[in-house]
Length: 361
Image 1 (cartoon, helix red, strand yellow):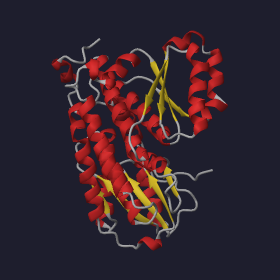
Image 2 (cartoon, one colour):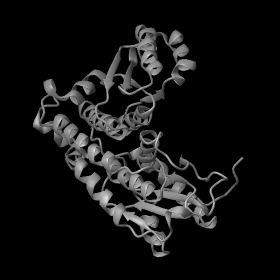
Image 3 (cartoon, helix red, strand yellow):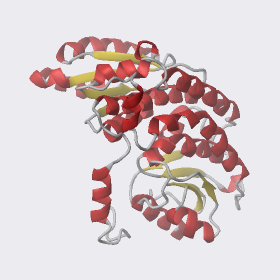
């Protein structure tokens, strides 16, 4: 097992994902400004509802925004991870096409359908068809820098979602939320970066606790979307299985499975992502559920978000999870950058067109 405090351990990270975390707070400000400067050819009063189309790291931005602003939405908003748009999307729907690469086939299929329905389309992308062909057709696209792994671009993809939704009257004014979020993210980077030794570094400590186990990440309300982020970061960076769920739903089904987990329980570690602003009953559910399942697992770890606004608390947990997943990769002696199995799958899918070959239902 690698020594996380040894300088040569960082050499495993050939793409510099850990060093790239240093730019997290700056990324928020830069992408926020790009979205604010974007010329949008339709007025906010033309928008009655909104959807964000995306996959993977480009979709999680929408999930986190949906959770963080759930009580401040002025118009309906949904995240679509699919080839098809909901039937209610029409000429009064803001469709945010979120694809870091600009080549995500599910998202491009939705974009095509959105233009056919004459929806109000805006893109967020670093290139590909979104920043190329669609931009040339007059569709406004928020530019983000290229050259990153999509999952490493979350803090460049998320602020434009917030700004666009505010500009189109979908959420209430959010400038203060983004200001605080940037401060919280910077504080997280300073506390968790590689130079901070394990004894004072919560992310390195978490990575050591999770090493050799299958993490089950549980969240609730604003931390539910973050639980999904943790799961996917562990999958892609550390190349190990991980799963996520949210409370109170866990208590209506998943907890029963622990009764029959048997010897597999020695592999499982539950991570509770708690928010001090959770509903009182959710707080009790975390406590009681932990008490019930802990004997059937290798342990339960509890992490509590810090920050004033829901967005700041969500991103506080995101930064911790991102660092933890990267350190988990280093502990396994692997480069956290490549995702060869995904590239293999994309190559096989590319042998046939991804336009609509069938109909939903």
